[in-house]
Length: 216
Ligand code: ADP
Ligand code: ADP
Ligand code: ZN
Image (cartoon, rainbow, N blue to C red; front, side):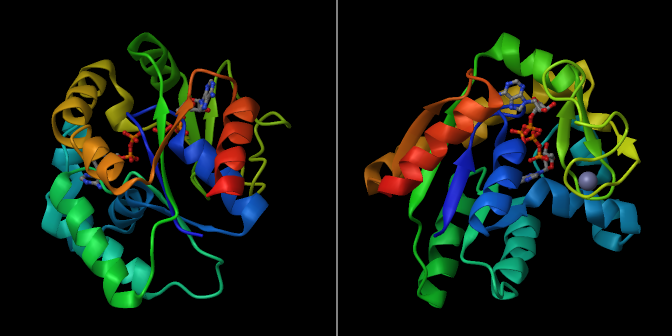
């Protein structure tokens, strides 16, 4: 099963992708995590995207398409994938369709997660993640079960993102409205778009997604 989780920054895509990865054995493909890994490794690509990411703007389509093509090509073992943070523009969505067609794969569902803006800002302001595996936590809404220890990988180091500053968040929300929201009608027209209420708590959103996938 191959699905896309779509929604504004802070909607809960990463949180739900990690959950589905564990529950269903799907591979999470997060372009944000891939870019952060490039930066951490100090690669040429990492250095190139740094300023754009920290400002809250989108990285260029050609860089992103190249990055994701390699990952889709390299997939082995997983029962399918969950795209998280990709596609984010119409050209990315079109490129994805071409990549999938070449590999004889199809999308089972594109799941839109809707969350109102005040909640997004609150979620992003309290977000921190595991430095080891990228699992997302929140100061109030989703703390690790054992204080200071990642539920997923047992890691003990946590980080806050430079682009989770309020000034960058405004730009990211605007980028979502201007550049990403136009892909919703693209998928609606293909008949694969489903919407969940991302305002519900984490478990409830998870149940809504699983219900959709049961029917997908
Ligand atoms: P995205 O990947 O869409 O940017 P995340 O999964 O990182 O979003 O979630 C953003 C923040 O909100 C994190 O701190 C996460 O723990 C928290 N969060 C995720 N889902 C919910 C939810 N349903 N209710 C409250 N907080 C949530
Ligand atoms: P969010 O919490 O906003 O969902 P992500 O981790 O998905 O954040 O992305 C962080 C940043 O990485 C984005 O603001 C953007 O600079 C870059 N990025 C990630 N995925 C893409 C993409 N598909 N296209 C362009 N830029 C991307
Ligand atoms: Zn972890």
